[in-house]
Image (cartoon, rainbow, N blue to C red; front, side, top):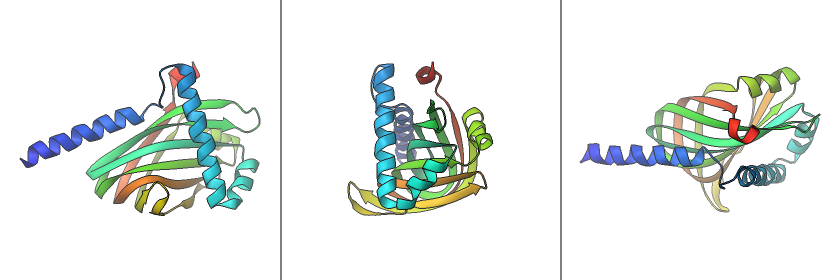
Amino acid sequence: MKKMLTLILCATVLLTFSACLSPSGGSLEQKRDAIERMHNETLAQLYRQRVSAEGVISKAVGYAVFSNINAYFFLGGGAGYGVAVDQSSRQRTYMKMAQVGAGLGVGIQDIRVIFVFHSARAYNSFINNGWDFGGQADAAAKAREKGGALTGEFSIDAETSMYTMTEAGLMAKVNLAGTKYWKDDYLNY
């Protein structure tokens, strides 16, 4: 019985990840529109929660906004999509992301991640290499506008900082996760 429940849970997590890897919509333009809506809503929410973030992002070389669904039952991961914006040219690069991790945790969480690049080198490295690896600890409980969530601002290095926000979900985890960000060939054609 335990094996069957574990198998069902794993299948559910895999289906959730595959569904979250791509924005809603059938056509190229519908998918881009969905990403742009997520981008605009996420930045508006960030600017309401962290007034100083707007100034930080406006002075940056570039930034990236991602929507990410994480699911954990001791093992787990996440998947999502987003867009990176070069501030000088306003060029958008549509991207995907996937995460796998092992650690102690239970739950499902919808999060938003905003990377801020303070140098062209950091921005170009993210667009072309897009690899992030790190440990993290989270605690959040939020459904629609109710509940509490940790919104964090982190410095990855001298050239890159990151904001995270919980959109909805319930999660308690401590893990070591590997995350890969890469260009979406279909949306960037």
